[in-house]
Image (cartoon, one colour):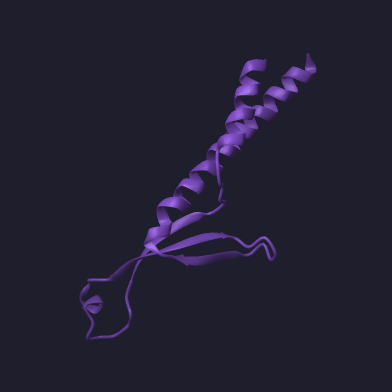
Length: 99
């Protein structure tokens, strides 16, 4: 049990950058009746990072360049791993303290 605890601690330190949020991919129409999107060929894809604003607690979004998506997706995955492993680490700590 102690070795798993130490393993998780090391893993958490090595995860890298974290981001809490999600990536949305959207195809849009512009409203021009003569545009190809009026016939069903939408513009895009456009990518957005959606998150909760830490100051207001309200949902927010930032538009992304396609070149940013891969790195941000990895950061979001790192956060998910961090969250799961931290929960296990804290559970192990409680068991170890009990004895």
